[in-house]
Amino acid sequence: MSETRYLVRVLAAVIVRPRLWPTALRQLRLLAPHRWWARTPHLPLPDPDYLHFRLRSMYGDVPGGTDPSALPRDMVAYLSWCRAWRSSRGV
Image 1 (cartoon, rainbow, N blue to C red):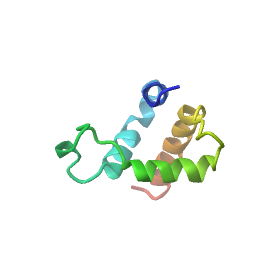
Image 2: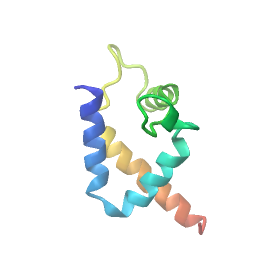
Image 3: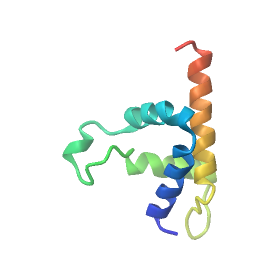
Image 4: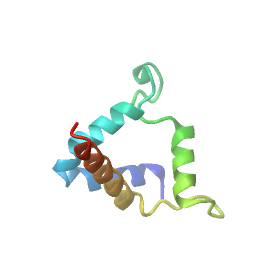
């Protein structure tokens, strides 16, 4: 499955959970590279090296590459954790 299809599935998993929208936008803003708009693809996407590190640290070395089929579920869990952590700090 292509990266675009995984991205679409992750977005769909977040879109159906409006309570996570503010957290998702906050995390996107925090992880977006400085002056992201000045570089192609002109999207506020996290640095590819950072994403590779996070995927590798989460899923390990999988022969033939990482199969992130659980990414939508894991992204919802991550955003829920970020939301709960922020709430617990009273921010």
